[in-house]
Image (cartoon, rainbow, N blue to C red; front, side, top):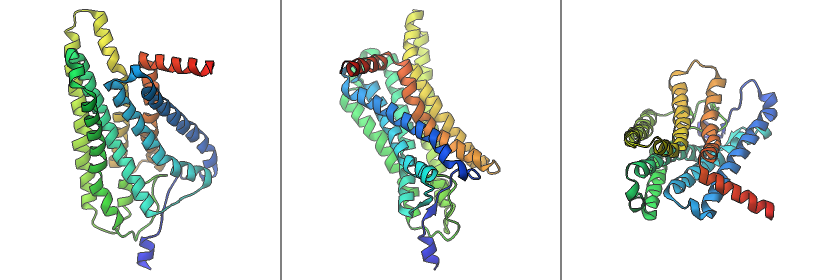
Length: 311
């Protein structure tokens, strides 16, 4: 009896108290998901097909767009399944797998933003050596390292979830599976699962953010040494898109962390809303930011539209 309950599926939760209007809530979610998929999909298509975008900066942007697509496709089935079809059950294996991809892709995103900061640092602080430092093979190695760091570092806390017994409630707090949500339902010693993510957040998110800030201090120092005001503005303008994406990502990470750690008495809707902001806002904003602030991408979009209109 106990083992049967332990293997029972988990139950996802939408907006508590608003179940009767879930199908209406699904409309803006569907629109946001569509925007994320089309925006990031277009970025990938442009970078793949436009030779003028075959540069390290845009290769890293392609990895960022791919990561955002991966994150979106990971949460989309359960969120829309719950809101549209009231499909609350999720098998334990599927839940742990979803949790693995959600957390590993978040780490990959942080790593990509760090790699993009390195790209901007080299472009501004050592422009004459840019092509010799950021060769295609080095960009591939950095990209592979960023992806491996994300997918390997999250394995230790996820694997124990598969053998923990679950004899308490099987009701989760969100419409998707988060490690910190699932581990609380385990009838086992979760000390490691509680401490490891804190250590991981300190070593990855905090350290990445610190290095990004330090790189921009050096970039600013270099830019301030440029005599021409026009050249200074031009150099800083190449960083605006990246800085915007960094702020969007880290502000949502910090917000979600604070809600989980210190907002135990906050209403459930605050927790749920903050988690959706974390998962949907950066993937939604990144293509918009780069389309507005990057002239080469604007030109590529205009060229794509002109080709489509002629066809």
